[in-house]
Image (tube, protein in one colour):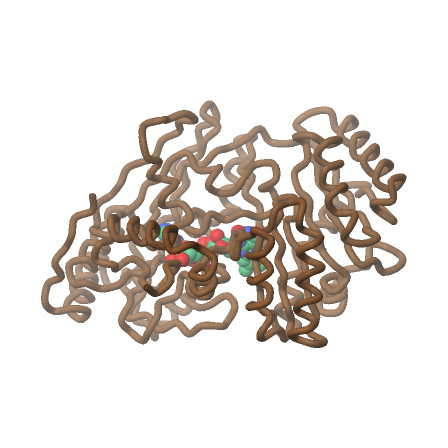
Length: 470
Ligand SMILES: Cc1cc2nc3c(=O)[nH]c(=O)nc-3n(C[C@H](O)[C@H](O)[C@H](O)COP(=O)(O)OP(=O)(O)OC[C@H]3O[C@@H](n4cnc5c(N)ncnc54)[C@H](O)[C@@H]3O)c2cc1C
C-alpha cells in the first residue's frame, strides 16, 4: 500500500525551494528556461505550462522529488521522449503541475545474454536499447517510427506497440521486471528476469500502460531474442480490401512464426509521401487502392526464407489476392519499402496534420470496418482525405482524416459496433478520455478508479489523464 500523505502547508513555492535543494539548481528548470523547451506537444494540439521541469539523475532523486511533491500536494507529470500522441506527458492548467523528465536516467545497467535480458533506465532512447542488444548479438524487437526519440519509460508507460507486435507482442510482452517510484516516493524494486513467476497479482503489468498515473518507471528489464540474420520483405498491391482477410490467413499459414510484420497503407498515404517528401518513388508502374508490406525474418537459412516468401507471393497472385507483388531484391530495397511506410506520419504532418484515430477491431472485421468508416466519414466530412494505414496483422488501423473535424464521433461509434478498441496502442492521455468513458462499462470505469485510488490516494500522479472525469 502506498502511504497516504497529508499535504503540508506551503504548497508549490515551498515545494520548489525544497526540490532545488534536493536536485540541485540544474535539476529544477524554470518553465521559461530554454533548456525546458523539450516539454512540448508532438502534435502541437495542446499548450504546456509547467510550474517547473524536474531533471532527477537517479532513482533516488526521482524518489526524493516525488516524496516532496506528495508532501506539498504538487501534481507530477512524468515525461520521457515526448513523442506520445494523446497529450499524456503534458501538464494541464497553468503553472500548477511539475513535469518530471526521466531523460537523465539514461544508463543501460546490464545486458545479460544468458537470460536473454537487458536492464535499461527509463530515459534510454529505444534505438539505443536496440543497438545495445544488437552489440550482444541479440534483438530487442520493439520497432516504431519514433524509436529514435521515444524512451523506455514512455514506451512502458504507454504499452507501445509498433510493427513487430505480430511476432513479438506489445511492450507488455517484452517487460520482465520494473523498478518504479510510487506516488508517495517509495521505490518498488521489481527488476527480475524470470519467465515464470506465479506469485499473485502481477504488479508490473498494472504499471505498464498506466500512462504515469500510478507511478514513475525508473528502469525496466526487457526481453531479448535471438537476432534474425535474414530478412525477406515484399510489397503487394491489393485489388481491394476484400483480399485482406484471406491474405492475412495465408501469410500466417505459409510464413508461420517467421512472419514479423504486415503493414497496410492506402493510395492516399502513398500520394502524401510522394507529394510532400523528397527521395521517394512509386514502387509500382500504376496506382493501386491498397498496399501491403510483408516482412518475414529468420535466424538461419536465408535461402529457405526467400523461397518461402516467393511461394507466398506466387500463391497470392494466383489466387487474385494481389494484383502485383515486388519482393525486395536486397536490403537496400527492403529499407526503401519500410521507409515508405514509416514516412506516412511525417507526410501527413507536412500536409497540415489529421484527426487521428488509432483503433483496433477483430482481425476478421478489418476490411468491413474500414469500408464502413470510409463511407461514414465521407458522409460526415465530405471531401476530407482519409489516410488509412496500420499494423493490420494485429487488427490495428490508424484511421486518420485530414481536415476531419467531426469524424471522431462516427469512427468511435463504428469501433464500438465492430467490438473494437478506441485506443489500439497510443493510449488515452488527455485526448481520448471522453472516448474511453463512452467505450467502457460503468463497472470497468469503477474498477479503474479503484486501482488508481489504491495506488495514488492523493491523486498527484498525472492527474487529468487516462481516467475519464467522474
Ligand atoms: C512518428 C511517430 C510514430 C509513432 N509510432 C508508434 C507506433 O507504431 N506504436 C506506438 O505504440 N506508438 C507510436 N507512437 C507514439 C509514441 O512514440 C509512443 O506512445 C511512445 O511510447 C511514447 O514514448 P515517449 O518516451 O515519447 O513518452 P512520452 O510522450 O514522454 O510520454 C508518454 C506517456 O507516458 C508517461 N510517461 C513517460 N515516461 C514515464 C515514466 N518514466 N514513468 C511513468 N510514466 C511515464 C507520460 O506521462 C505520458 O503519459 C508514434 C509517435 C510518433 C511521433
